[in-house]
Amino acid sequence: MLTMQEIKNHYYFAEADAELLKELFPLAQKNSEAMVEEFYTYLLKIPETAAFLRDPKDLARLKKTHTEWFLSLFCGHYDNEYMLTLQSIGQAHVRIKVSAHYVNAAMNVVRRFLIEMLQANFPDISVRRKYRIAVEKILDINLDIMSTSYQEEELRRVFVSH
Ligand code: HEM
Image 1 (cartoon, rainbow, N blue to C red):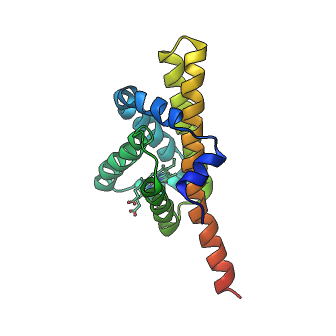
Image 2: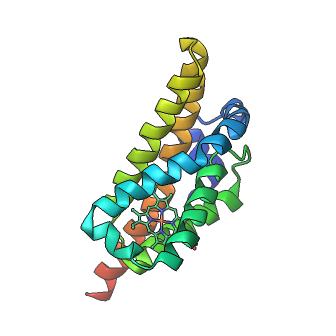
């Protein structure tokens, strides 16, 4: 199993990226409500994902959960504990049987939102590029770790069926 440091090395994720993400925290916080609205508008439009979001009580709780995850992208500290949290987030989706396809597609919604947020706030292209690269790395790392839970579940099923 890889350590968080190894994963970061494979994505060329350096301390400078962590610093850049931390700098974006206040902007991300200001935009978190809009992000979560976009995320849920998206999930509610697709019958397969909307099926998980039927109960309004659950919906309010989940919006909070997904907002917290969004803000954690900008926490500035990405250690093994961060990796374990992402593994457990992946496992939560495997457990309730959200297809990996929708997790990938939802990540694309977050990515698009963040790229537009940077576009609107950093007119200088070289500054914007630095932030964009750091954002893309942490999103890819998140997806990578969450996807591992799906791959592990797949392996478990293969072993059990033999
Ligand atoms: C739970 C993040 C995509 C539905 C969670 C949790 C997090 C999270 C942090 C809390 C996990 C825990 O309790 O340990 C994400 C991220 C996604 C994503 C980062 C992709 C970018 C989706 C999609 C759906 C979904 C596509 C489909 C509707 C849910 C549900 C739960 C949940 C229903 C509650 C699970 C439970 O009750 O145990 N998600 N999520 N999520 N997510 Fe997502």
